Image (cartoon, rainbow, N blue to C red; front, side, top):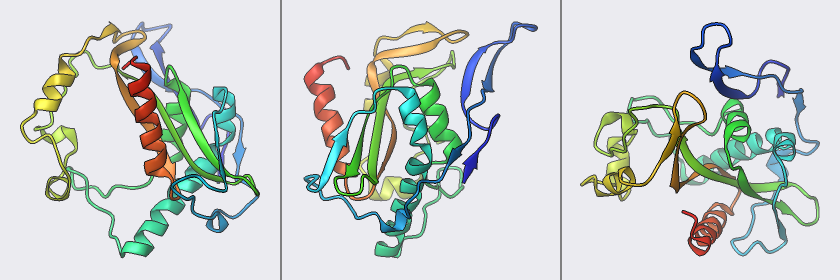
Amino acid sequence: LSMGRGEGGCYTGKDSKTGEFTARRREFDRVREPPYPISAVASCSKDLECSVLLWPPSREVWFSYLPEMLLVCNEAARRYAQKNSFKRKNDADGVQSKPLGLEYIADRIDIDDPLNGYMVRSVREGWLQGFITWTTFTTWHRDFEWNSLIREAGISDEDKRIHIWDYDNSLAKELQSQERSGNPDDEGIAWNRVAEISLLGALGCGSTLLRLVIEELERDGDY
């Protein structure tokens, strides 16, 4: 696992020559695998006993943890499949879903504004057991619309069978009514009252991290 210069990070802006709005990758320093086997990391308990909750203070710190975050996602998927004899589901377009990719994780750390998040590490070894980030939902599509009933929403038939979903589109309509501001040709359109969980990967503590963030968002009242 390595990400060399020119391989990571996506940012948006206007081309200096054409004036067109494009998405481009910017270069980052190479990152390397952590010095411990991810398969040896113990699953975290729901109450975070023998673990510590951390708040990475900057993007640079988050970037330094990229390899660990990727491997945690892959290991979580492997353990789930092993435990449940689970076959990866197909998305709405028929393509099999997969754990988070390195480029996607790097892009979110690079462009999410604000970037908020927690990490969980084992107290004794300091090994990563989980992480979560959230931000203000932003889109660069002028005609973006919340709609749970169209194929592009990515809700597969399997999802509809096994999960509670927005079958009457009422949640989508409520989201569509929220305030937003910004320019899709510059900083993007920010939905100022809509929070997005952008990254989540965990070995046993995923639900704990999600509840923690939801409780924090509800308490602060910014979203």
